[in-house]
Image (cartoon, rainbow, N blue to C red; front, side):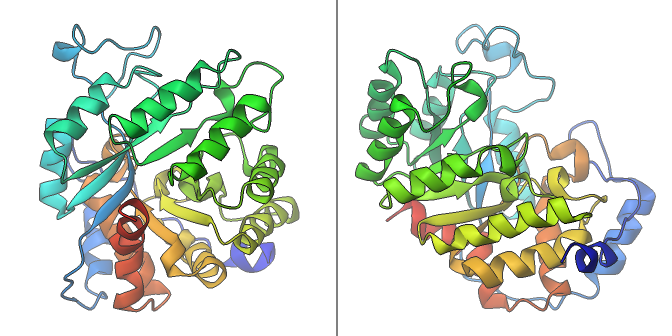
Length: 327
């Protein structure tokens, strides 16, 4: 499998960028236009929902919504900038994942959810504090503030502790009881955390699981990486597991439009089904990479490479997320 995927790797020109201070590079723009001509236009009546992005306070708002110490953002990520990008790209709604910049202070994201209740869903950040206080905070965020998902960041667990400890299990079990999906961020590699994910899925089958950014599995280039990717596909044996085809710039080995991910998407769809796969941009980090609109268009280009039907693409671009977050 690793050898077969390796033959499909392709690297395109310099990454394109789009923000108030960036524009597409000439070569990347030419590549995009050339590939876009191969896409058959379709008319979709389904909402486009971004399943993974972040917002944080602007420097002018930081007095009211302070950043976590040492986590001052290097990129603009306020909601006004996001709304501008979404309008330009034709994206109708999104799941906002609580950013590390505000850590466990959810006040900024909560203010956005309250201001735009029909446009955004909220994903809170699980607080795995030893004293168990994070469970009460989680319940309040869901029951009082309307958050619809929770993120498990294993690197926030106390040193030496796993997500399967007493606090982790309590949070994960409660997520299932509240019908709130639990997302996993495996930034340092799925192989480090998959045993914990499998254990939690086995013990608490009613809790829906979201794997952020393809569980950080890049296209395999050796047998070891091929085995890890195979373990990702094998998680489809748990019917509660969903995969985010998100932050493509993080998992691709190439530049926009990330065509080396075509065989990855094909195998993920074959294993999990399109109704368990959802697109996400990872705004605002994607902006200097290929632009927000580019993040959306890349999925269409990749889908065209594997002859994904327009109906299947609609599931990935919004129907899966909508079904999951509004159920």
